[in-house]
Image (cartoon, rainbow, N blue to C red; front, side, top):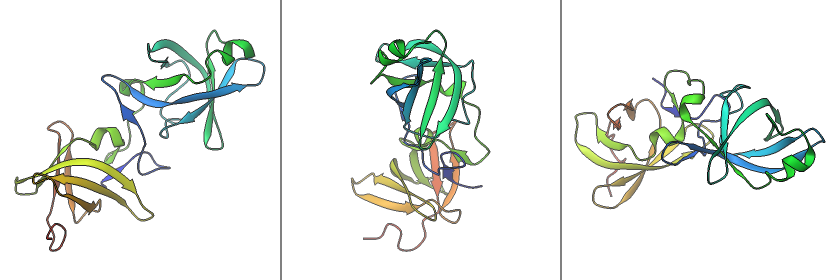
Length: 185
């Protein structure tokens, strides 16, 4: 099992989750004359959402259907059904883009979105509770999980196979093997 988070091009996603939606990015400006918009993404969702799928815009989460989607450097160019002019696209500037998790194609086995892991309980592989996974940091070699222990201390644990023994999303638990020196003061 690979205890990676994110998608193939990024181990850790920046996606934040609200009740039923992921905060996927923000519309930064119109693009061209035909109503496309430039989206600054919070995580790599370009390969996970297809044309024809819905996105939800703004605080009131107005439903909009994606008509086209492509990468442009680190940003995405998005066509939205019914948005056919630059002036229509300009009205969307600054809007937050939300996606429903169910509208994204599944990740490969053993790969997780950040929002799936942050907030999970952390316990030892023999079932002893340790605390809560509160943050994930991407490093060059592997992710690092920040865990708030039950006594309030925070520790950093490498998200590597000898340490992370299992991730159980159904039960909301990350199981780790405590190796000498990982938590000791």
